Each structure stands twice: as C-alpha cells, then as structure tokens.
Image 1 (spheres, one colour):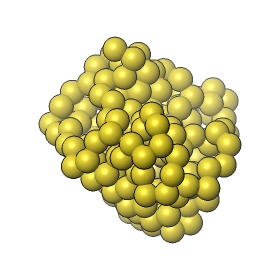
Image 2 (cartoon, one colour; image 1 turned 180 degrees about the vertical axis):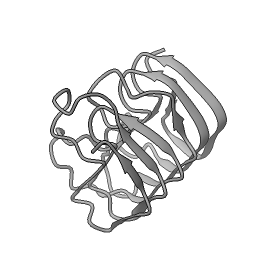
Image 3 (cartoon, helix red, strand yellow; image 1 turned 60 degrees about the horizontal axis):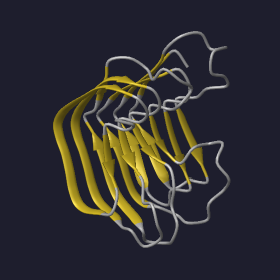
Image 4 (cartoon, one colour; image 1 turned 135 degrees about the vertical axis):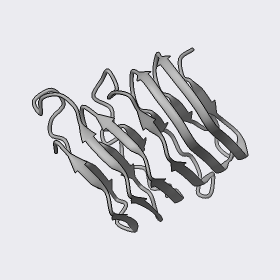
Length: 168
C-alpha cells in the first residue's frame, strides 16, 4: 500500500493501538482529495510505526477554511526515522507553497518521534499544542539539513512545551 492508513472524508475517526510496518510512503495520510471533503475529530492514539518512507503522520493538502480540524496524535512510537528527509509528523510540508487556509485544533503529545530532518512541522496551523514528546534526530546533520526539533511556520499560536529533544 502507498500509505498505511489514509483518512479522507472522515469525521470522528480513530486509529488506536495499532502497528504499521514497512509502509511505502506515509504511515497515516490525512488527505482530503477535493474541497469540502471534511477531516474532523481524527484521533491517532498508541500507534507503533516500524518502517515508513516519509512521515509517520502527514497532512499534505487543505482547500477551504474549516475543512480540516481537531486532529489528535498521542502516544505514537517510531522504531526508527523515515527513510527520507521528511519530518516525523508533518502538518504541512515546509517546501510547499504558503496556504492561507488555516487548520485549528492540532495536538501532538506524549509520543516518541524519530527523524533524519525536522522532528515536527506545523505550517499554517491556527491553534494546537506540541507537548511532552521525545524528539530524536537520527543520523548525521549533513544528511537532511538544516533540521530543527519543531518547525512552526505561520503557526505562532501552536504551543510548544515539555518536549525532550535529542541530537538537534
């Protein structure tokens, strides 16, 4: 499969106590394919990732205000970093064009994240928090540089606290 799990057009959806192994692209892909296809109240809890090519959790595209909201990522564990220069968790990719559609209610907490690049990226996020995670950089800094543990791009209202950072 291209992605381990893909949430498209999903309201009140849960992925709990699961293992995703040897995934070709993203572990969990949060991707609305057309405008007005909603992604609301998504919960990704206690999921173990063992081999992903890109991000463990990835939100790529947004179309209209209010389309995507309230995404909780809690208690995920990564055996290793992705095979590529993608963040462990990415809500918007740093190299994508600016998108004025703002997503609200992002929570990334209590997780063990590993990455060769940025640990977490939040881009164009209007509210949320990134807290109490262990974020570990894997491999030499020259492989995927520059890299930071948490990259907030146009996301100043996302609170960041209590994270343990290794190797950044």
